[in-house]
Amino acid sequence: MQSHAIVRTAGVGTALRSGNDPGSGKGRGHGARDLLLRTVLVIVWSSGFISGKLGLRHSAPYTFATLRFAVAGALLLAVALVRRDAWPGWRRLGHLAVAGVLVQAVQFSSIYVGMDLGVPSGLAALIIALYPLTASLLAVPVLHERVTRGQYVGLVLGLGGVALAVSENLHLDGGYVAGLGFLLLALAGISAGTVYQKRFCRGMEPVTGNAVQLLAAAVATLLPALFAEGFEVTFTAGYWPALIWAAAINSIVGVGLLYALLQRHGTSQISSLFYLVPMVTAVFAALLLHQRLGPLMLAGLVMATAGTMLAHRIRN
Image (cartoon, rainbow, N blue to C red; front, side, top):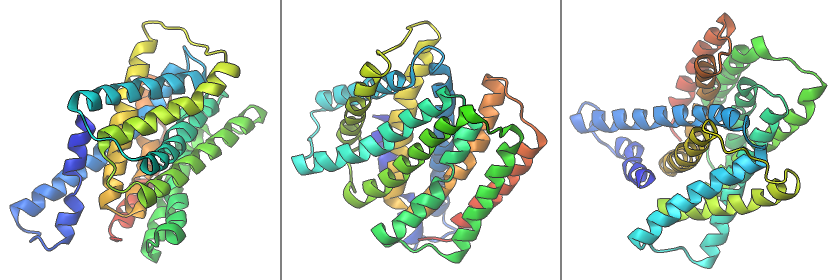
């Protein structure tokens, strides 16, 4: 229900571009609501690295991903059945499943594997922060979106801030190589998946559409969870909060909000928000995982914020 409400309020960018007086109360209200939605997206997406890191203390990565997707998909399925929502046709189901496997299964399970192999959450967030560049470049030939020189400058500036912020804890050794490979796979998943979502799944019904995508992701990760990990999980008191947060907040609210904003704004504009994710992740990691937040991290935060603001000045 929460993701359904998000979609209904996510059309603020259209209203602002359609000629509302910027000085009117309505225009200001829509702008504030849009800013709030973007802020929530950054916070929720950042928290996913922390919930994943906490969940991996009690579960193997593909197993945690499978349980996350299954719980979230079951919640939305129950809501859809109670409300008697209409389900998409077979062709639409196929497109939704493909987008779900890419955005949910490929991205998040690969992030979990990478962190399980020793990649810190900050470095994992840095690699996924390349998503604005990769998604924007992919959106040019696929979605025919126009990315201006100013946007590229903003995106590169934001990437520089991200690199500066995590440079304090960047240590490459043999143990990280496989983990970095999985994180690059995660980057490919979210980049291709969000472009595919906007190309083939426009106007997705938030409850049934997300349910299909999550259940498809659960099926995709179930095989490696069973045969590679033996479905390894220890259901302790500390495991449940991480799993429930990952399922309800990260999978339902976070991905639903991302899709809602992508429907109303250009891929380049929304994806550039992900430059802020490593910074927020670092703050969460310092508070919850007791990781150090040093001066380079703070300097990178300023630089990445400036790049994000520059990229957002250009409307698609």
